[in-house]
Length: 345
Ligand SMILES: [Mn+2]
Image (cartoon, rainbow, N blue to C red; front, side):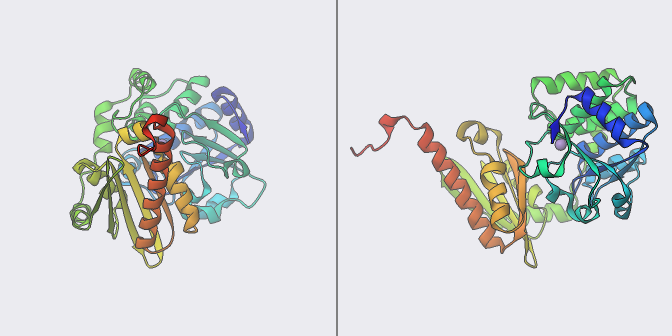
């Protein structure tokens, strides 16, 4: 796997793609994934008349708004196998492809990856060329860099699509860094329509999701440990939404688990200060190892992560709590001054 700068990455992609390319998104693709794919498709068509086909197993609701508004076409998974140039967008792990995995070309394809998540350890076996930066909040910003490295000017529509990704992944600037604003300003200067972005990203909760959130609070177990409120709950679906709701209610760390038959999906969120103050990284310390323990996969960000696999909810929740405690304990030991330890000496 070769990591390239934007200009070299674009040149290599244009060279390999010849006349068509598959843009492949993670399951439950979000506005960052779909906005990035649409703006990259536009760039490839303008630079070299390359035709892009976009593949995603599923879309989340705001991604669906973007697809509908811009009439973005998703291609039947069966056609993926015919492509010899693949670009993975906003994902770093083959498990995140969902059902698309089985449609990847068996061999001989050149695989590019554009992502802002820390590369998964299996990524080098999967990918030939990588465009990666973890000092930005969205894949959309990497697509902006590709446009800047090209000979064309970003259109207002593409700028709006990229702004959707940037605004969504920075959680409406809640977790923005200085450069998030700088890149957003560039998008505005290219005509990005912020009002449009807000309306495309707004997804009022439907009734079933509100019921799931409310029921989850009834089943919530609260642990007051390490100076943190850690809450865990079981539900049938909407595990990520439930975690966000629990953080909104005052939890420092929320874990929600949904099992269907013997497949379990588990999601966790922490408020921002948890990662800063305790070093707990929900992806690295909890969901990645948990995914392996339950025969599935896990990943995400330091303060928002998930895993799936084969286990009961109770078992998966128990393991997640163990991993969280282990990480918090390790951190405590590392950072406690020696004079504070063994006070009974
Ligand atoms: Mn993203």
